[in-house]
Image (cartoon, rainbow, N blue to C red; front, side, top):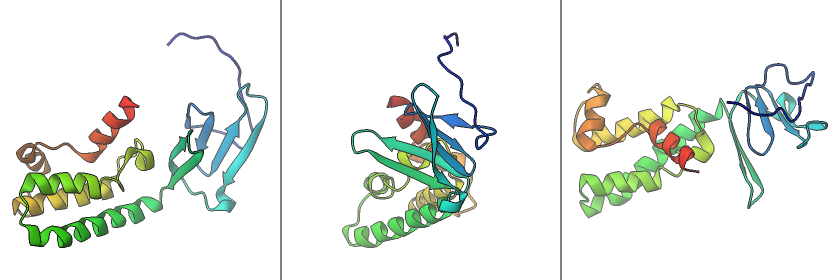
Length: 171
């Protein structure tokens, strides 16, 4: 990339910045800092004392002016929410004798809202993927130890991280 340097920013509280979003949000380990557009002023929005612990994803919704943040320890909670959503969906749909494709579509809508790119971003999300694979293997009636690549191929699906990356790149 070639470009003109507009400004530089240095701060004692940000030693190794990992990322900067378009809205000038910098996400670093236990610190979330907003930096003014010219790089002259900054303010720590959240720190470790606020409960921030290894933030994985920061998403700012401009129109609604909402900041979504996912800490590392919250990913397991979100995956557990995925699991609960999956079982609730299966319980509700059990009486309707739906085919596999319909159930997969329901999974994408019902459970997919918890696994969305806005919350997980580029973080791999192994725990959420386990829920996805468990559901897929259950639909095919195969052992949980069955090779995951074969499951994806049989159902014509992709790992959730791939879907999220495609969704992120479309935005």
